[in-house]
Length: 81
Image (cartoon, rainbow, N blue to C red; front, top):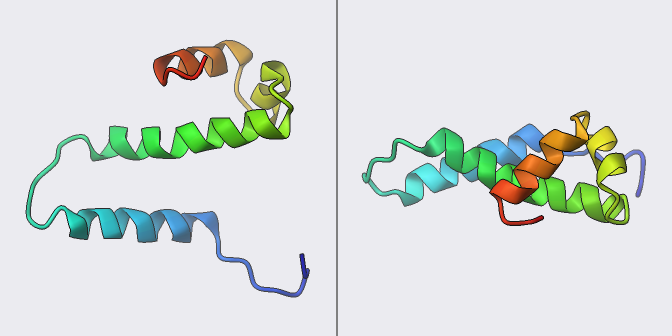
């Protein structure tokens, strides 16, 4: 990757996605946006962390900065473990 190339901050990608989602609601209301966004971000975050760590949950938890038990709990919640 070219170190001189500008990188779009992750928060900008998230902001754009949330904005698009809210537009797509087209006037319908929701009261679970926070939970929805967390789920939609955590699942690929955990998937990629585990892939990066060759499936090792202890290493993935270290990479994420969370306790292994927390990672295992979240994986179970999302049907990933």
